[in-house]
Length: 342
Image (tube, rainbow, N blue to C red; front, side, top):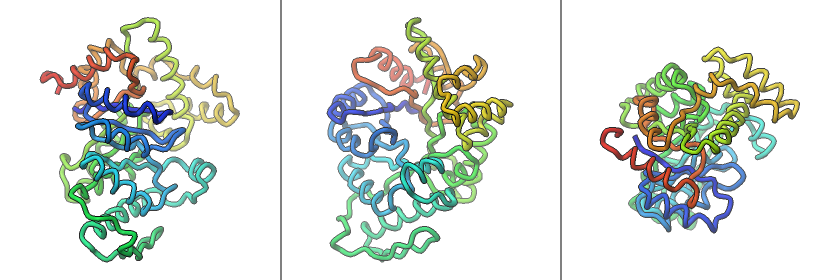
């Protein structure tokens, strides 16, 4: 199992040090997120200041960008990083698409399929000189002149990961993608009963085997080495679980565990802006279902035990920050690299 670093970079000037630390510590990959900042820019600096890390977005919002814009960004990052770039895409939810990005929300699974196929058509045009003629329901791309076509390069087979929760998006990932970002709000049961079978149906449809796709996820963990930090970790994770569960697309994860009513209560609290009350509904039982706890040295083995056969690469939900928990991060990486764990 691969161990990756997750980065929430709020200051691009810090990115070189972050990338150097993650590379030197032995992480397998590095993921950026589209939250308060743009996710692709930090990867330029990460590519410049690392040598071995895979570099990807987890996620970039797909529908807020045209396939051609995404294609150009991915093409340049793949070349600059010597093939280490991973294009990680997600739909986001309806409210954010319409009210934050100002784009239409329409048939997200079908539209994501077209984004993936359009990207590959554009990249094939640039690499092989194939005439661009993508005709879809949402995108019609037929113009690509030499002036707007970048030069071919050897890293043109750019991996595409997509993110999702529901079975149809999982199936799309299995059919077309090299990776799938499993949402952090998951339980072992949800992975076994919903995600894994849906991925397999997609693989079967695409005529592919399980080795063709990597399942990746940010996972909630609570390091217990420092008793003073445990309470802070627990509070932050309860808050994050409550926030996710209050959003309708993520409620099936709660429902499969019999907590559907709690998810509905969280939704009502969120609608009324009662954010501080929401974590109080996350019981210890729920916390233990979503999060692993243990000393930094113990967590790798516990992660493998929980996710064996379910995930191929993981990153801890909280970001890697040089100067913070460095010994813990090094112990974690060493644990994942140990033969007994891998």
